[in-house]
Image (cartoon, rainbow, N blue to C red; front, side, top):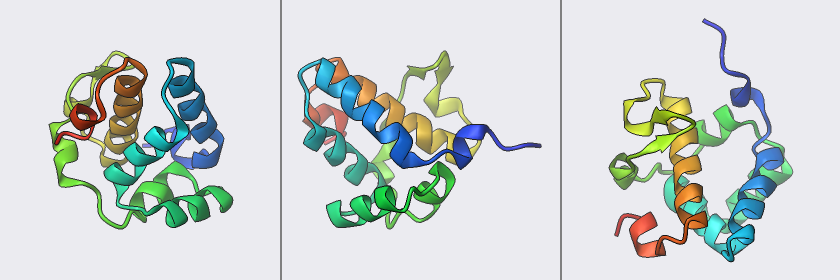
Length: 116
């Protein structure tokens, strides 16, 4: 089975779109970063390194220091697919991130987004 093309896409190329989506709705880059750090376990410096290196999505998630165990609490639909039903691990992580950024853009409180 061939891999989805997003796996080889640079995370740094999509990152500005996450920021833009949030900022259009009055949210901030730092909130997007907080979501990414919460989900992946990277710290801010490590995130910046991944962005500079133009790391692809597959590697970005594979090298995540500590994927947050609470991410399993993320439920809902992204691109017409329920995230909790996605079986392929890398695609599920990508869709978790998409869902969290969607929730941010929809005005949800950070405490709820971060499942605290």
